[in-house]
Length: 171
Image 1: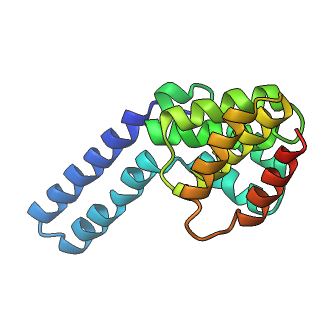
Image 2: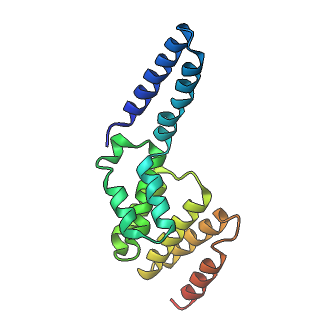
């Protein structure tokens, strides 16, 4: 894994080569190179390893997702801020199955760094509410559940939120 700015340098070099091809009257090559430069620019904002980890998670392959995330050695230099948030979010999802304490740290870091989609933010807050509920912090859990409910505009988490509120009444 290399620094994120190298992707922009590669895109710049491809664009310069494309412009050079235009000046040499190779219009087809120039157009192709300009279009090809979109790939490193896209990968600057959407890291390829995080995309592959999301694909593995869709298939419930947690080990495969861990393998792809392991390729990111230093997320602070390799990823932009939102992608760092998703890096922590994915680690939180995978650890929520086994180690709730570590998962809580990853979810808090993901929320702090920011997530692009409201649904992902709602899932992170819902998981944090579950952690707070297991630690008998009812006020914090209620706040997080209400925030998750506001963020869940498509009501995909409605059943989980209702179930957690029912469990909270028992505490």
